[in-house]
Image (cartoon, rainbow, N blue to C red):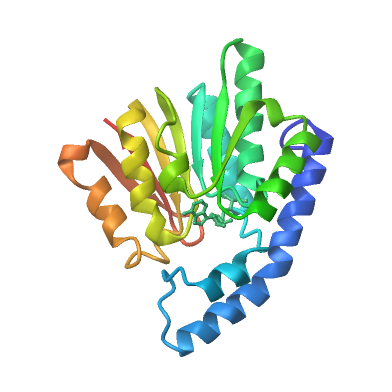
Length: 226
Ligand SMILES: C[S@@+](CC[C@H](N)C(=O)[O-])C[C@H]1O[C@@H](n2cnc3c(N)ncnc32)[C@H](O)[C@@H]1O
């Protein structure tokens, strides 16, 4: 069954999700070995960066579809994505914004960010292939620099990044989130301890979020800006 009513996009995503799944055994083995060597999962050292530099680690399809549905339901115009990789989740967000634009013309953009040049280049090819490049502003580099100026108002944010970068990402974008904006963060149940500083931020009453962990695999945090 076609999710997007766009067979080419369905086929591209099926291919990319397949590639990501095919790499997951190798990735699990790598982190298993690091765990035995007592290296924290959240560490971002050169060996991990080198190993992960060609891994898709794409957002699971059901979570990505949920993000698509949210962006449609909210009529999102400006969506931010921390962690683009080969562009899988970006394609879902951009497809949602394209539908929003068809329903109501205007300015719609997904701002993504990726610091691995090879991944960014591959992502750009995928956006072109899907005819969605016009809905994506991919900012290449470290999110500490690329997400400094994302513009306002932001309707939706996806945080699908190494855990230690989640808090800096939300801190940078929070001032631009509109009332009612949704922030999704992946794997917050599996990596609850590693996300401690992120939870400290979104549960701090002065930051104005309500939050709940949705029962997707590994936990998917959905926070709403009050
Ligand atoms: C889990 S993957 C993103 C998967 C993507 N959302 C998808 O569904 O295809 C996280 C990505 O964030 C990138 N990344 C990690 N730290 C970063 C940083 N500080 N700035 C920019 N990108 C970063 C990694 O290279 C990796 O490709």
